[in-house]
Length: 368
Image (cartoon, rainbow, N blue to C red):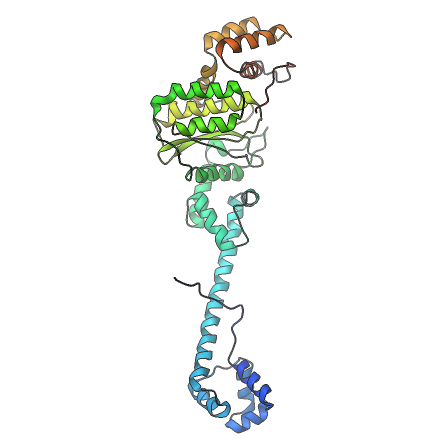
C-alpha cells in the first residue's frame, strides 16, 4: 500500500542539531570552533542554517562530536529535499488559490457549500468542481460556462431577477447527480402507461413525490428533486443521462397542480423531443411575458392533454369564462370526477388561462 509522503511545515537544518549537541554538552560555539579548527563565523552560519554541511564539514563534525559523517550528510540531504518539497507545495497552494479565485466567478460555490459538497481542502474542492462540470482545467470551465451563457436559458430577465452562474451551476449539479441514479431500461412504448400511473398518483395526492419517483424509475426515467438556487426561477429540467431520460423538479411552487403540470411538461420533452435527439436539453425557466419556443409550446400542450383534451376543456371553459362561486367550483369538481383527475389540476389551469391567481375556492391545491 502506497503511503502519502509527509511534508513538514518547516524544513529542519542540521545546524540545529549541532546547537542542541553543544548546549547539551555545555560547550560554547567559540570553544567548539577552536576545537575543530573552524572559524567561529562559519560555524555560526551553519548553526543558523545559512551554510550547508558539506562532506568535508561532515567529517570534521564526526571527529568533533562523535556523530558519523554519513548521518550529517543524511540530515543535510533531508533538509534540502524538504525545502524543495515545501517550496513546491507553496507554489501549488498559490496556484490552487488563484484557480479557486477564478472558479468563484463562474461557479455558485456558496450554494454547493450549503449542500455539503465542499470542504476546507482547496485541492478537494477544485477536484469536486471539475467533476460536477465535467472539465479538468480552468480554461475548459470558463469555456463551458461562457458558451452556455449564450443560451436562452441563462439570459437575464428585466422583470424577474436571475443569476446566470446559479442557473448554470444548478443544471450542472443535477446532471452530475443523475449519473449515480440507477433505473430500469427505458422504452418510449411505455408512454401511455406512464401517464396513466402518474395521473393516479397525482389524483390520490398521497406521498406524491415518492410515488412519482417510483413510477418513473420503474419505466427507466431518472427522477430527482433538487431545490433551486437563489435567483434561479427554475421549475423543471429534462435531459438525457447515459441510457436514460432524466426529469428534475425544484418544487419552486409547492402546489399539486404545479408539480403535476411540470412533470407532464418534462415528459412531453422526453417523448416528443429527447427520444429523437438525446443531445438536447430543456430547462424550464419562468420569465414573465417570455414567448415560448415551438418545442416549449409542444411540451406545454402535451401536459395539458395528459389531463384534459382540448375539446373537453373548451366546453368547460366556454361555460365558465367568469368564475362564479360556488357554481364554477362545483363544475370543476364534477369534471375532475368524470375525467379521474384531481380537481386542483382544473383549478390550476383555469387560473393560468384567466391569469387570475387569487380565486377564492375550497379546492385544496396542497401537495402531500
